[in-house]
Image (cartoon, rainbow, N blue to C red; front, side, top):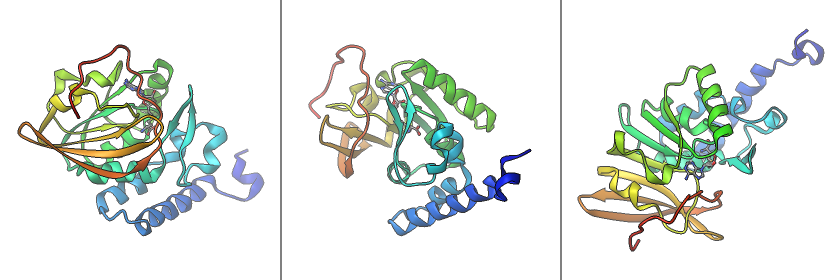
Amino acid sequence: MAAGQLTGRDPAADYRRDRRRLVERLRDGGVSDLAVLHAFDSVPRHAFVPEVMRARAYEDVPLPIGRRQTISSPTIHALSLEYAEIRPGHRVLEVGTGAGFQTALLAALGAVVYSIERIAPLYETAARTLGRLGVEARLMHGDGSLGWPKYAPFRAIIVGAAAARPPEALFNQLADGGRLIVPVGTRRQELRRYTRRGDDFARETITGARFVPLIEDEPKGEGPR
Ligand code: SAH
């Protein structure tokens, strides 16, 4: 017997209604990019969180996904995607696949998605979830702070974990006019956007933030940024 038959509730309908509410909340909170709002309406966030967290899947909060990692809040994902200015066909690198939720949002936006996850079990779970939902994305288990030179340059790079300084390799793998969205800082963090113009990188602060730390295997050459 399906759970809904006992309670008289249809979980799928509940999720749809909760999802709709979340989209309204994001819009009221200032997210104006219709494609981003539409992506949130089409991707089932509950499919990316552990079963015990499902009831909270459409709250605007980060949730634990195991291995001391979290799926970012919907607002943070929405801002990242809005500032990245993703358009259909853009080649996009995501650093920190996590549960794969943002990966699915990127695919819903029509991006050609490349995503790297450092922690093997998370990579495997995300690959399974995305596969089950039929989301097309190229995934890799590895250190995303090195970027993915084979597929560079990227129109956008979105980093889901914070470092004291953004990894230099990511700047180098950004296309001209491309955008790097990256949280910077240790205790106090800010989410930044860098826009490439030739060899120049214009820097803006999007919002204050609290991301999990970027796992860097060894010290990398870092620039003055
Ligand atoms: N946006 C994701 C959540 C990101 S959480 C989602 O929708 O679920 C940040 C993720 O970055 C974690 O899964 C963490 O394991 C991963 N991470 C940390 N350092 C990394 C690195 N150097 N390379 C790739 N992934 C990394």
